[in-house]
Amino acid sequence: LYCSAALAMAAVLSAGAFVWRAAPRTAPLSRFADRFASMATAKALADADATIARTSQLFIDNSYSKAEAAATIPVISPTTGRQFAEIPHASVGDVDRAVRSARACFDTTNWPTRLPAERSDVLRRIAAALRAPDKLAEMSVIESRDCGKTFAESEVDIGFCADVFDYYADIAPTHLVATPVHLPEGEGAASDFSARVENEPLGVVGCITPWNYPLMQAVMKVAPALAAGCAVLLKPSPLASLTCLALGEIVAEAGLPPGALNVITGGPPQDLPAGSSTGQALIDHRLLDKVSFTGSAVAGQKMLQASAPMLRPTALELGGKSAFIVFEDCEPFIDAVVDWVMVGIFACTGQVCSATSRLLVHKNLEQPVTDRILKAMENIRVGDPLDPKSKMGPLVSEGQHRKALEIVRQASAEGCVVHAPELDLPEGLSGGYFMAPTVLTEVPESSAAWREEIFAPVLAIRSFTTEDEAVAAANDTPYGLGNAVYSKDPERTARVASRLRSGVVWENCSNVLFQQTPFGGRAGKGSGFGFEYGVPGLMEYVSPKTVVKSNTPSYSWKQYVD
Image (cartoon, rainbow, N blue to C red):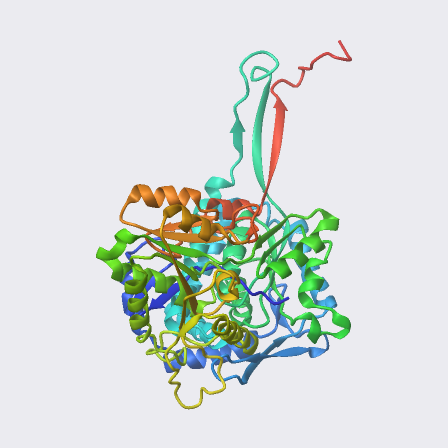
């Protein structure tokens, strides 16, 4: 199953500014400013090649193996459009083998019953391995080659993955302990009974993740699930699976027991015999206790359809069409506003589910803000993601590239004015899936560019005159993931934030999230349900159990026996 939406949680390169969008547990953000000039060394490139060759197989029971009949699918470079690796094409039998391995780990080993602090020790070793300089550089190269994001972005992504493992290692021992329940005083209540809520691991979890933040999207599910004591089946997108497969040897070396994390890969239904699919085989498996999915709304519906007969809990993060409201009092700091606007749409080449792709700017500031955005766009160098001079890499695939260009073409036909600098690509990149940063003005409210998730570096701009008008326009979408509001008046930003119908709102910034801040769509809207990050992200993988105890074995209500 292709995943077409993902979480905005990574480093961002925006018009010459470097912004850490998911801060580490310690150290000021300025510490990472030098990464703007990061570049992949010859050693990192060689290490990446060796790791890809060594780990591009199914990871089951802490070992690598080929798929049934040695089936593979090609890995296409978004930078060149040419194949550079291959990954396993897991069959239904491969999926069953992986699920049963996880089931055995959960049902027959002490992994789920270990003290949370003991599991945390394993998570910390995983974090330390990811953070080691050589491994960090190697994994960053793999990520950039696989999904097309710049090396600087990938480097921060991988570092943040380490921080997420550490974060859940830190909080699990506190939040997984049994919690006493206060009972009413008196006879027949607290005098005779006590109660507690125990937080048990939920079981075997199938995690299906997208391609825009390949390892990060996996870790935001895997880390809390492992911290809770679950066993995990990870199925990354076939468009970007390499770092997830490489994670296998890291967790094995860190002491994770066999079956606690299995990684399987495979292609979409049209590529498999009889219309079968690796992802479909996974979500149809009756030995899964939960499914956690990040991707498109259409695929999310398939997750629910598969889970419904089993009444199986399913968490969905399904993308959005987020708005960024800029009020007229922002003129004194318009450069900061423009920088945040660009952070919200040009990070990860616009392939971010919470991208603030709809700019609603007060009519008095519309022209100044637009002019500054267009000027700053000239500084966004589009090119090879491993070139330290590149600020934006390619889109992930030919299909994504074709879809984005078609929506821009359609927008032009609908009367939108298209602003995009001409691409000046180095020799050898003509086959890549590159797209210039694009701004649309004079956008009709009915335009697909205004209403549909594009998942590309395309910003649509409209103006407003009143606060009510801005809020109504922002909320006029089936999605409910994120929105942003900018004003020098804190009462206004708080008031507007309370009226915006989304799971996350940013005041005077955009797409800033930390491992401590829960992230998820607003219930009842089309961005899904469930949480990632923060304490709620941990509790997604916990099954609460209420235990009520009679304090005295000889005590009874004497209803049937005196």
